[in-house]
Length: 142
Image (cartoon, rainbow, N blue to C red):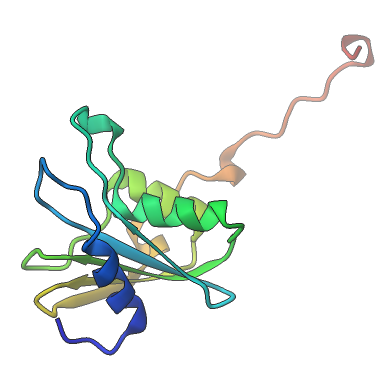
């Protein structure tokens, strides 16, 4: 892969650490925080398939556990023939933590696509969708 984009290169490096013995589909992800910090993640599979995590969630959760709350850009790298977009679960997580982030979807063959998280999830479910708590009567407090 030839790219001058440091975030895509970080995602490519993260991809080398993927644990994907079942699918063989290695994915690397790198997120760029507003303060310039780059955090990476790779997909991690498990024999109990639903317990694995995609690279996007690994990277975002790693950033969040480091106290990062503002993600500006995300790069995702696979070895597919075409850029691969995040799954539905990852789209929801990306919206929750990086709704305005730009995405670069790249392949090891040098193909790229760009979009935003909002492009991926045009009708998102988020914190604003929760109804405010009902006011409690004074006699209920206690």
